[in-house]
Each structure stands twice: as C-alpha cells, then as structure tokens.
Length: 393
Ligand SMILES: Cc1cc2nc3c(=O)[nH]c(=O)nc-3n(C[C@H](O)[C@H](O)[C@H](O)COP(=O)(O)OP(=O)(O)OC[C@H]3O[C@@H](n4cnc5c(N)ncnc54)[C@H](O)[C@@H]3O)c2cc1C
Image (cartoon, rainbow, N blue to C red; front, top):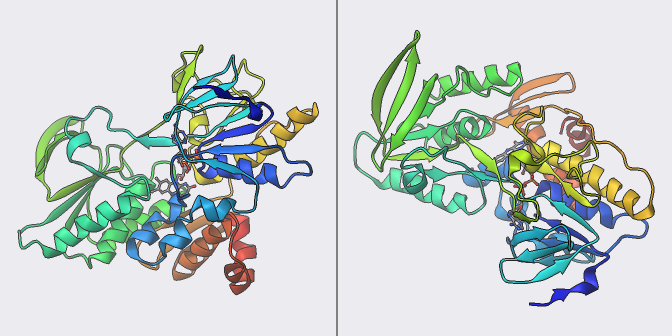
C-alpha cells in the first residue's frame, strides 16, 4: 500500500484516550492549528473513572462514553478508526492494521495500558475484567446470572485491591444489595497502596460496612472456572488454600501497551522519555499517559497525569513547529477521588478531605466537567460546584 504523503506536515496522534484526545483538542485551539489526525480503533471515547457509575446506572452511556464523531465534529480533527501496528521513526510513517500508511511531522503515542495477568494460570481464560466500555455488558451479565442462579453459596472473588478493585467491589455490593459473598484479594499488606491515607481509611470502612471478606498478603497462584488457589503469608509462614467462586474479576494488573517501533526494537521498559515528554533520541515523537509511567519513575498512571501531559505536549508540539523552546513537564498532584458505593465517594485534594454523598456529587460533577466538549446544560447546572471541583481534579 502507498504512503499517504499529503499528511507529511500533520500531527498524528495514536490513541484517543485522555492523553491523546487532550493533545489533539488543545492543539486544535491554537492560533494556526496544524492538520491533526487521530488514529483510534474505537468509536467511543470512554471516561474510565466513571465506568463504575455506568455499571450501576447512575450515569448513562452518552455521558460516560460519547462517540468520537460527536466529540470531534466541527473541530477539523480527522479520526481514522483503525489500530496502529507499527511506527517507522526513520521514514516518519505509522502503519495501521488495515494496511494504511500515514506520514507525520510530529507524532504522539498514547496507547494506554491493557490488563495483564502476570502469567497466572487460568486468568486469561476464566477471569472477567473491568477495564473498558465493552466490559460493562459482561459484568452486567455476570450480575444478572448471580441474581438468577439458585446455586448456593454464591461467591464473587475480586483480585486486586487497588482503586479499580475497591471501587468495583463497593459498587457491586450495593447494586446487588449484598445478596452474595464477595472476597477481595490483595497481595500487599493494605488496600489502595498508592492512595491518600484519608481515602484508604474511608474505603476500608466502606468495605467493612458491606461485609466484604478482605484477604491481605494473599496472592493468587492459579484459577479455573469454579475455584482459585492462593498463597498467603501469615507471620512469616506461607500457607496455601483454595477458595471456591461463582465468578472471579481480575483487577490486579495492567501493562502499558505500545505498537511495534521499527528500527528501534524497544520494549516499554526501555522507553526513555526526556523532560519534555519526547522519546529520547527523537525530535518529534512524544510519549504520553500510562505509557510514560516506567517502573522506575515516580509517575503513577492516572487520568489526571494523562490530561496534564496532553496539554504540555500540545504546547511543545506548537513550539517545535515554530522553532521555539519547549516547556519541561512537571506533574501537579491535584488530589484523588474514589467512588465507594452507590452515592458515596471519598476525596482528598488541595487541603480538602471529604467523604459521603457530597463527595459523590463533587466527584461526579468534577469528572463530567472534564469531559471534552461538555454540554452547556451540565455547566450551567452547577457552576459553584464546578469551581470547587475544578481545583481538585
Ligand atoms: C476502570 C478504571 C477506572 C479508573 N479510574 C481512574 C480514576 O478515578 N482517576 C484517575 O486519575 N485514573 C483512573 N483510571 C486510570 C486512567 O483512566 C488511565 O491512567 C488513563 O486513561 C490513561 O490515559 P492514556 O491516554 O494513557 O490511555 P487511555 O485513556 O487508556 O487511552 C488509550 C487509547 O489508545 C487506544 N489504542 C490502544 N492501542 C492502540 C493502537 N495500537 N492504535 C491506536 N489506538 C490505540 C485505545 O483504544 C484507547 O482509546 C482508571 C482506569 C480504569 C481502567
């Protein structure tokens, strides 16, 4: 297939998640915006922090996962609905799965991460996941099966007590009115290891109120459809045990996902990024979002980080194109908001610590106002809350 060379001066963005979409929309707002091409296989952008509210029905699909055709309509940003298979940095061309070859002047790589099983046997085949819009239908199906089934005892195991595991556990317990047992399994010695202590405490209380069986220092070794084998460290001794489950949801790991880089056989761990978010050794390739979080860096993958990086990259791309100097990226931690059940949340940010219904409303509005090209209706409905929540997220 021939290279489409009409785009040689274009900015190509791979991945329309938080980082990629922010870059594209911010660049578009500039004085003389370049041609921008977004390569993204999905038809909907998904606001992942609100996936729990979509599951519970507290929010609707149009609020949480708008179509790119709506988000990008009238912006002039071209959306190619395809996946990038490889990047040739010497020829400055990306190749898509369907065989398109697109040339670029500047490239933004923001392909995010995918669930990772750490090679635990059975996870790939038998575990459910909660990572993308498409998972909602599967988890709703799982919940419906639980409700329908007369089998006793019914038990759901959720592996991983990071934000996804904890938030999902509370939401499912509330949706199903605690009608079956839920085990939450965590290999570390606490839940939410990277969270603020107030949020950890609130989440722990929320789990206790819902009578969740919490297993700390416990690692899954293998699983099949009905049960999983675990190892647990108790006072220095390793003990092995089996837990039966009706279903198991895996939230314990994800791994940055990167298209193949031709002529630089790099793995994610080798991805060195300079202070201006450029791939080291390249003048025009920017690497953002979850992809920029290397094991040895102090950056933790989050929507907040991805949005800040998207804004910084847009500024730097404009600067490169004008021959001006770029701005180094520095992350400003604006706090953390967690959903801990129906109508409940906990927030720690900018000196504010708050939990419960008010926190839930602030969190919801804070996120809704972050939706690209937000409807005026939502903005005008709660401007005082928007002011407050804008400071947190
Ligand atoms: C359930 C859940 C809840 C979360 N809650 C929070 C929260 O409350 N707060 C918070 O700060 N963070 C939260 N996160 C984390 C946050 O969503 C991520 O850190 C953030 O989305 C990363 O942004 P990104 O742009 O790097 O990747 P993503 O937003 O994941 O976007 C990557 C995009 O790249 C596309 N893509 C992948 N491969 C290719 C390819 N080969 N070619 C083209 N496109 C490709 C994907 O389709 C996707 O649209 C949550 C994550 C999950 C899964």
